[in-house]
Image (cartoon, rainbow, N blue to C red):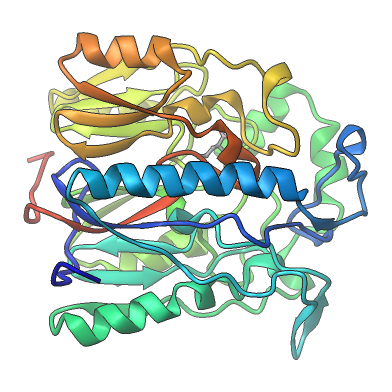
Length: 371
Ligand code: NVA
């Protein structure tokens, strides 16, 4: 670490000084578990099978992740990298065993930075239970380097069968769109309320306001735990018209005070929209992605809306995947400098430019953008 470490980040747009960029090495197609199964017969991984992602895909993703890290360093931003585990290992707690882990992408799911605090989220997949260990060497070094850093971890979940609705996937996938959306709005999805569960990437940080998406990986208990943990914040539970909600950062992406990018296909709930409009925020519908579902990379479990998963370097500069030219044009038209970054090869590892990173330091202090 070259620059002195100072953990400080209250939102996703203040000028960026230090960031973690994930790694693709060793990532697995996960063995099936109650919360998730993969089913890619055309790509050699039909439901029930698992194993390492092909070497050529790992190399292509590593090249883009390394290239992104170099680009950020070239702009004077300090970049730290996690340390992969042997993800092919079977893991267990006293209550279950799981045949594989997943990987150390995307870091945004695991760690939530709020001011000088870095919070390890619970996570809700058994295959991701130990993922925090990839980041422990960095967290330890931040803790030693920055006296003011606050290091927190949410309660480690048990993830026994009681945390999941048995048979959820087959039942849910057989429903029509409207019924699925009703279930999403009620957060009646895969997770039970046996224990608090959340992924950090379901939290959108906007200074004094934190918006927590209830999703396939975040339950009401997870939201409640976050609300209690940040008593000085206004913490909102939100849902969208998205049949498979999984992380908020391809749906609701704040760009700078007063401007948020929104996925038009995924309507926000009226209460949330009202809150933004009352406070004079513009909700900008994002340009449609260039990619369609048919030309996503193989083994990709994200939607084309991953195009919206952009990383802000400051309130006027955004990194956008290089082939997403309509979005780039839209943002240039709003006065942003757009930095194109080739990144679609990283998508099969779980994310785009925002997912693949975790803010450690941005300039700026806590502000209230909804006074
Ligand atoms: N699960 C989201 C991506 C999250 C960054 C999507 O597929 O659109």
